[in-house]
Amino acid sequence: MRVYRLYLRDEYLEMVKSGKKKIEVRVAYPQLRGIKKGDKIIFNDMIPAEVIDVKRYETFRQVLREEPIEKIFPDEPSFERALRRFHNMYPKWKEYRYGVIAIKFRILGRERK
Image 1 (tube, rainbow, N blue to C red):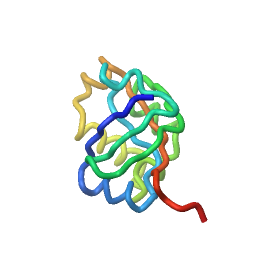
Image 2: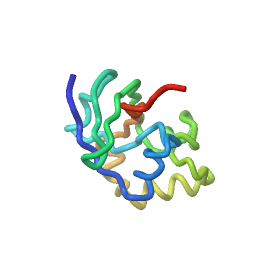
Image 3: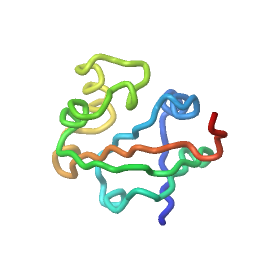
Image 4: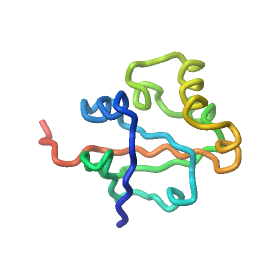
């Protein structure tokens, strides 16, 4: 089991804290390629989570077609707005060079109801 430290913009960190954001999507940089089920993530050095699934895709467009947008962006933007968000965070050349990963996670330390 490996531990990954991922940093989120404040707006997305709040979505993770609330439990609404359940999938983190990123360019599949070499340091993230080995991430797998059972690994741990620490978001912004404060929120521990466990990886429950990882899927690899070629593009952000493909992720948005196959994963529920409301679990990536709980404020539920349209498909095109969600795609623009990704392209505002990552240059297209990185997306095409490295591919994309969708990391499904659950926050640790919460009581199950």
